[in-house]
View 1: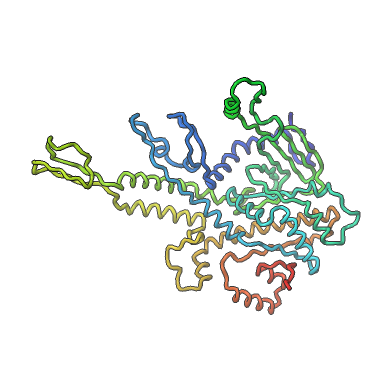
View 2 (view 1 turned 135 degrees about the vertical axis):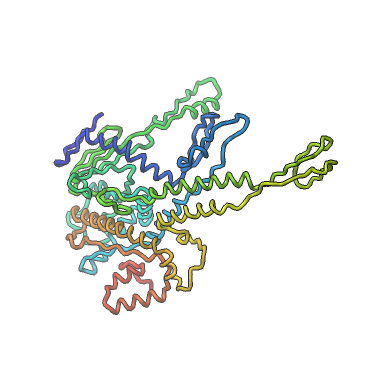
Length: 504
């Protein structure tokens, strides 16, 4: 069934354009994004060996190895030419370290409302909506997805919120407001599912937003397993084995088209939801991992590491092959006469012969290879520079830090990691502020909690990722308070929310 698109208020989104966007995403963007995920996750894949016909497991990063390692030429059918493959995933731990530095501790969103009581109420409302959607785990997942793919989107789901009854007048009890606001749900949309319809006039604006993905069908009768009739005469175990061998996994395609004024959903090209968007704005917040000038998509942390990861895996595999061949000694017997019994030339054995020129020589053994070790070390250092994450971020200390205090020493050694973390926090904080403003706007539109645009401004306070001396921190906070810095901001820097109640 063709798409029955509703006119999206002068947005030139026709059925042919929508299908063109989906086709371009499926054949151009999706393979690239899936490659980023495979290099990050490095999952085990089972392939069928064309030589033996058997299914053999392999790691996803083996795709980047040269053919001499993965498919060596067969020169003798009496022996196996398979070489040992070594895969060391140096990408995942670097991305995890960046997320730990960025969101290892809870963040605080401070309202800029002039009234202190209103600031406290807004803080509680935003905290409730965020916790209802996953809390810090949601933010950590979003940061991880953005680091892998280059960007991530937050979609504010308002279906349950606008369908629920509310009082005729705005509730006065903040707990009642929080209960209604908790119907709002924040959903992460990862780039493999997202198809943004970018405005022709500004790459930072969207005319519409399309979500397209395939998923396993959960409908009754859609398992793809042939039924076994209860009166079948053959063995039930054999019937079950036949069913499992012929099992297929059916999939269904879901497509959502969202604009500022309308929302449609299609399941297998069949329209199942068609309703106006009561917000009047596109409920999507786009966050770039690292900004890319004049592009909607951001920069991925995985992409620059892929060629270096391939080179590292290649050299590690070559070294493993060399060590395998040279890690043991070989013995060559020369001049033994014919009367000497033929035995394996191994240590711990004695031979006798009448030939004075006979000898047994040893050769082989693992020899040092400085150039190989230096090359591997240089690859690792190149990955440190490309990712801005060195092994110290994971707790690996290879040398003395110095005579500086612990915090200053860590700042110097982790300067690149901290600078990249702050760059990510700027983009992520701007996106979270837009999301908070969108939540407050939805509450105002519904009449649940009235706010003006000035009260919807939010500032995100990020915790310090480095360990600190608590005495020094409290002393600095007291000095800031004496200088007139707002108490709410100081509490946020210390990791306390302004609405936290004192324990008595």
